[in-house]
Structure formats: structure tokens, C-alpha cells
Image 1 (cartoon, chains in turn yellow, blue):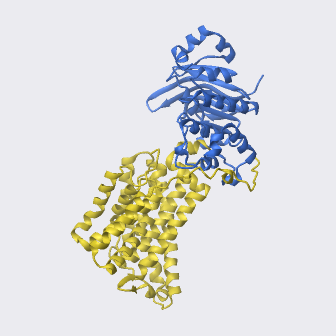
Image 2: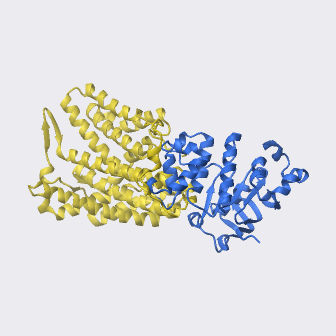
Image 3: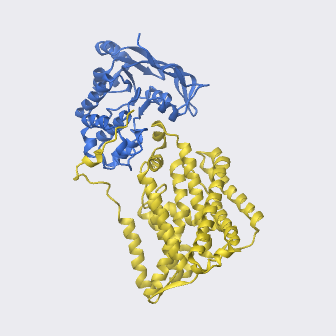
Length: 344
Length: 249
């Protein structure tokens, strides 16, 4: 077929009066309301700023980890409870890479420090992506369409992965110190904002922007969004959705690896159980956001991050319960999550 | 003799424990509109889904232009069947409601990576058939009315030339004026030598479009012949289609 390319795309001729998709602002408003409501409760503006930045940083790291999982579920109905193993692998790979680049992390130069961090992230993403490819082929593929078996075998996969990590790196906690120039805080007025958290927010926003671009502006992204809605129709149009799914699985695993590095640096230490610890949080996030929805996952992750930090400060005993409470409240309001994917 | 585009021989389909098709023999000649009629539950939709590979052919064979696409030993996957040049409009339409009309069309056009790469001549032709699609081009497809969604579903199937189009009950629940639009669209497609296999309960549409007709009952073809002959023979209509015909006229 001849693809006639002209400058007058039909989009340009569409009448301006026809509205585009109406954006649902309510979940964003909820995010704003949580931020504002916490201000008087916390009392001090400087503490509020510190907590909010910490919450946003934590939320964005969780988003990076959870974004792949929500698409994997949306595309193929696969419940991957083993997602945590990619987080753990990413974090441990970072300890080795940054340990091996001790000269760079101990340097007083910001650029050398950042180079070490980014090198650790790239290697961790490659390792987690490679593990994701093997995980999909060996563990997930035999159990397509069988939810109970998926839960059991992916959890089993994570346990095996954790034990292998113990074999390679040992069972003990390993320190993952921040490079020299990323330690400490910026002090703005009375508020102190940890430097690393600013970096985490920046990386999180870049990943979010890239994901949105890929999903909305590329054909592969369109196929992913369409596949989340109706995979049978995508196949009937002549696209191999399995191949797309493997790509999404590998990309999601690599992002979890990146999230693992960021989470490890956030905690400044890693333990083999890091994946299992974060697993509950990421499932809460993708359920709150609406299964399969990337934007919902983003808003849900920020809500979870903020709630964890505010309640941790205001009422530490409630903090453990706060995210479950948040999930219950949101599901009472919107049973399909903040941004439900239609057709599901 | 007209060449066969599609040839089903003794096709059986099982869905889980259920045996739905019991040896379907169906020939679809090139460049014609073949109607597949029958009561509810006769196996019409299952036949289309089996041709597309969405259900596997458990016995028998499906050939497209002489090449086996379904059946033991030669079952192709749905994407490969589609890539041979077969488009499918399911009864539920399969519209991606979260995507815009434009995005739906870009996905349907395998040769286009973005809207600017769509064949504009063909697009103008489609807009001529279904003006609503031009009006709501950047609108989320989920907001379209039922008739507009059906137009989009058909438009997706014809955004690029395809040799064979399988359409499942396009007139279902639509206003007569929209049905006339669809009839017009299918006539133009036929004039371009596109072969159409159309499942329909609306006899008016079947009579207006059909060259050939196959009637199904209980998972088998029970009658094949010229549409004109069935249209004139009321006794035959009643014997083959019973009340379903009258109810939809």
C-alpha cells in the first residue's frame, strides 16, 4: 500500500469545537488535598516541606518499580508476585558496581559521583532485564491464564531468587552508602531537603515522562494501551501480542531493577528480603491506581509515598496501617481504582 | 468458475468441553458478498472466530486462497492469519475505547506508524462513507454512539486494502439510516473486488447485499445457494430461518 504522506493530516482538519478526551482531575485534586491537609496537621512548614519531598521521592521510586507490573497485568492478566526479585537483584548489583567504583563514589566531584550512580543503574537495569527475560520464559509462560498457579509459582520464583542472591552476596545486610556529594541536605529557609531525594524525584519524573511519551506517542505504546483493553482484537489486527508482552515484561523488570537501586540508596542499605518488603507496597499502588493504568499507578504511588511519610511523623503506630487504610478508602470511592481501564 | 478465497472443509470447533461446529463446509467465492445466516446459537460467530484462528479448528481444514490457515497440522496463529489479508469485525466491535478514533485507525493500518502516514486518499473515502469519524477524529472512541462505534469498527477493517473481510452482525441495534450507510459502504467495497463474509440477522441487509448465502443450524451448513433465490422463496426462508427472519425484518 502506498503510504501517501501529506502535510495536511486529518488531525489538522478536525473542527476545533470537538473536545478531546476530558481529563479526570479528581484523583489529582485528592493528591493536592492530601498535601494541603497535612500542612496544618504537621504544624511546622519546614517539617512539612521535608516530609513532602521525602514522600514524593518515595512515591516516585515506588512508581518506577510498579509501572512495569501494572502493564504486565493489564496486557496478559499475569499476576507476577515475583516482581520483588528484580528489585533485590538491582539493589545488590548496585552494591557491587558502586563498591567497585569506590574511587568515583568517594570523589568530591559531583559528576564522578553521578557517573557512578548512573553506571550502577544501567548495569542493574541490564541484569534485572535479563533475569526478567528468563523469568518470563521459564516461570510465567507455562501458567498463562491460570491465576492461582501464577501467584504460587511467581512467589516461588522470588524465594528461589532471594536464596540465589544470598548465595552470591551473602545473607547479611550490605551498606549502600550515597556518594560523597549526594549526602547531606539543601537548607532552604528552615526546611532541609536531602539532596538524594531531589535526585530521586528528578529521575522519577524523567522516567514518568518517558513512559508517557512512549505510551501515547509511539505505535508500540498504542499497541500496549490497546492490548491492555482487548488483546484479542490487537491480534485480529495482525500484531503478535506475546512478543509485545515479553518486551513489556523485560522493560518492567529493568525498571524494577532501577527502582531497586534507588530504593537501596534511599535506605542506604540492602537486604535480600528487600523485594518482599516492597512487594506489598507496589501491589497496593497498582490496585489503587486501577490495574493496567500507568497514570493511575503514578498518582497512586505518590499518594502512598506521601501517606507513609506523613503518618510516620504524625502517628508512627498508625503508619503501618496507613497504606492499607488508603487502599480501602480509595476502593470504597472508586472500586476499580483511580483511573480504571475500561473493558476490563 | 470464480476462484475461491475461503474454503472450509468439515470444520469442527470445540470450546472447552463444548462441541460447537460439527463439520462446517463453506466456500466463499472471490469478489462477492457471501451471507452467513441462521438462528441464534447456530454457530455463525464461532465460524468467523474459527476462520480467524481465535478458536482452533479441531478437525477439518480452513484454506485461504489455497493455503491452509486452520486445522490440525496447519493451524496458524491469529496475527499471521490477519497478516495474510483478512480483516475481522467482531460482534462486540472490539473498539479500543480509551484510544481516540485516530489512534484506533492508526493501529488498524499496519503500514502506518503515525496518523500522518495514513493513506489520505483512502481516508477521505472512508470519511465520505462515515462522516462522523471525521467529526470525532480526535475524540476518545469510548464516547462514540453505538452506530458510530460500528462505523469505526468497519472503517478499521478497510483502512488498508484487505482481500477478505469477516463481519459479524454489523446492523445489530442500529437505526435504519445507519444500516443504509453500512450497506452503501459494503457495496463500494464489493465494487473494489473485496470479498466479504457477512454474518447477519437483518434480512433486509442480507437481501440488499448478498450474492451467495449459506444458512447454518446446529453447527452445520444446512443450505447454500444464491441470495436472490432465498429472497424470493418464502417457504424456504421459513423452513431455514423460522421466526428469526420475521423478527428482524
